[in-house]
Image: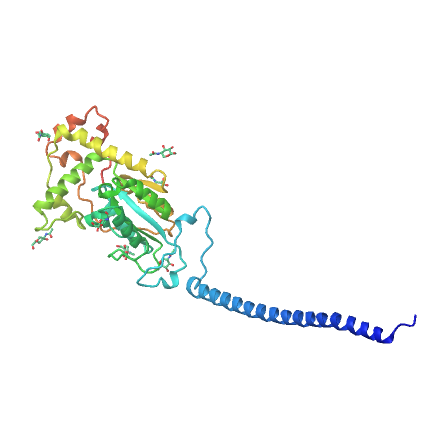
Amino acid sequence: MADDPASLTKETFISKVPKKSPLMLRMIVLVFAMVCGVFICSVCLKQISTRSKVGFMKVEVIDMPCSKPTIDPSDAPFVHFPKPTTYSRAECACHPVRYFAILSMQRSGSGWFETLLNNHTNISSNGEIFSVKVRRSNISTIVETLDKVYNLDWFTSASKNECTAAVGLKWMLNQGLMQHHEEIVEYFKRRGVSAIFLFRRNLLRRMISVLANSYDRDAKLLNGTHKSHVHSHHEADILAKYKPVINATLLIPNLKQVEDTTTKALEYFNSTRHIVMYYEDVVKNRTKLRDVQDFLKVPQRKLKSRQVKIHRGPLSNQIDNWEDVQKALQGSRYETFLNADYRK
Ligand SMILES: *[C@@H]1O[C@H](CO)[C@@H](O)[C@H](O)[C@H]1NC(C)=O
Ligand SMILES: *[C@@H]1O[C@H](CO)[C@@H](O)[C@H](O)[C@H]1NC(C)=O
Ligand SMILES: *[C@@H]1O[C@H](CO)[C@@H](O)[C@H](O)[C@H]1NC(C)=O
Ligand SMILES: *[C@@H]1O[C@H](CO)[C@@H](O)[C@H](O)[C@H]1NC(C)=O
Ligand SMILES: *[C@@H]1O[C@H](CO)[C@@H](O)[C@H](O)[C@H]1NC(C)=O
Ligand SMILES: *[C@@H]1O[C@H](CO)[C@@H](O)[C@H](O)[C@H]1NC(C)=O
Ligand SMILES: *[C@@H]1O[C@H](CO)[C@@H](O)[C@H](O)[C@H]1NC(C)=O
């Protein structure tokens, strides 16, 4: 067993040095790598945490100054939190806002109806915005106008404060609405706009109102001013003195045309969220306004308008050639329009 000590030492030496050195090196490299790794990780984590903290704080400051109400999922498409560009909704920023449009025809009581809605502190209906032709030139101008209204950036006398809970406008069927119906229905669905149809049941009475209003545009019966709506019985009586002559030959085709337009509008907008109101029903029963307030999900209020109805009393007193008109409608499906219903 007596080996050469020199060879042993040599062997030990040889075997020890190459064996120990890579191990040490490896350990050093490993420790270095671990220290580096831990350092890099800690730096990364620090950055991530500061970034997320900043992001969170930003979200908190800009989007969450108050707590938004929990919203029923089926209702969610109709609930909005607009951010007007020119003012802050302040303490009402987290109150939901609903978008609506009153879809109607001229002389169907929509002016009166709108003043009733605007009597609600939280409803802002901005009038016949699309009576101005350039705004309905094409679908781009229509969408641009609607966006502005629904973002609470449209200013009229009907604009309310930052606590508006329902915002909309009055839109006549012949103001680009039927023409661009496909795109408008798409817009209503995409942006969650609810439609309030307001029609008149008695289309003959509507026709008288159309003729009288168009006559007054030139005649200006009220001391030289044309008025479509009045606020006193005195003024109403002056305007009602004019009795139009109705072309009996064209009467039925005209009534049918109005009826067809109404039916078509209901068909086009059938897939949007909507409610159908009739002028005569609201006149007879003010409680009908509760249905509209429910539809817009605003708190119930008693709504008042200062407007006075122009044409009152029996139809026979309002048409110059009453007998011709009677003859034309008797036996037709429009005969009921002659009845003395819908008086006041
Ligand atoms: C609602 O009408 C009443 C009576 O005309 C009026 O006193 C009130 O100020 C109106 N409210 C709004 C918000 O217009
Ligand atoms: C209605 O308006 C009033 C006063 O501007 C406000 O205090 C209230 O919170 C509003 N209601 C809703 C439902 O937005
Ligand atoms: C839409 O109408 C506006 C105003 O009349 C006009 O400036 C614009 O070029 C039109 N846009 C399209 C796409 O026709
Ligand atoms: C028209 O003017 C007269 C005299 O100025 C006035 O008495 C009358 O009330 C006015 N009528 C209307 C409807 O404004
Ligand atoms: C009624 O209108 C038709 C078509 O415009 C016309 O031919 C006819 O003369 C008018 N009738 C009366 C009584 O004005
Ligand atoms: C609207 O659609 C429903 C279901 O598709 C249908 O039952 C109803 O008759 C339609 N109404 C109109 C006015 O087209
Ligand atoms: C008035 O309208 C309300 C709401 O639609 C309804 O519940 C009520 O029955 C109506 N009253 C009459 C007398 O028609």
